[in-house]
Length: 230
Image 1 (cartoon, rainbow, N blue to C red):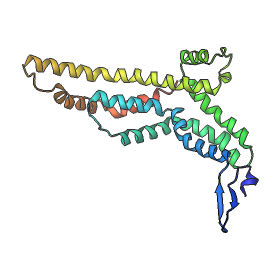
Image 2 (cartoon, one colour):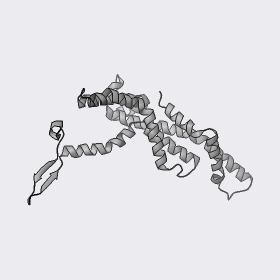
Image 3 (cartoon, rainbow, N blue to C red):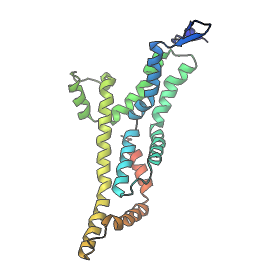
Image 4 (tube, rainbow, N blue to C red):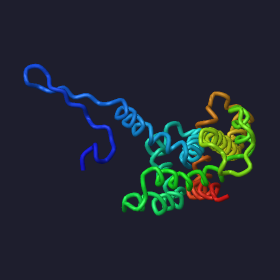
């Protein structure tokens, strides 16, 4: 199938002096390639990835382990947990939009609108009403009677703001036990007159021991996954 038959802008080929040829892309093709480049980042921001990676980053800071686990490990863990959380939404997008389009039973425009619906439902279920109303006022729009009336340009920033707020709330709860350990260790060292010894050096093994004893990784991963079930 040629590019013209598929309705996509083709590469323009013009003869050049000396028997060669010059190739140029149309503006539509450049816009399409740019959109494909930005698509992964946009999809990550409109999924569970934002909350998960922020919480894991705050957990690492609360434990005081420096760069352990490393950024690639946290990103990989966040991606796989995001796929686990988003699997019902992805299955709905595939069955309702992608598969009918690939089978030739649905045009591209209809498949795109149908495929966005499960993603909108997920984002709306995780977006706080206050954030949604705030961005509605900023956009100068009126309140909506139904969730389906919310435009995507309002839903996307409201969803990301809600995800960051939720992630910081979870991070605050994670910090509390580790801060208590730091305070206890600092108090003990001061009472013993060991002013020159760093409390972080002593408290880190106790933090790791506490995290291992409570099966911290399973607890954190399970709690993050369950936080989306509402």
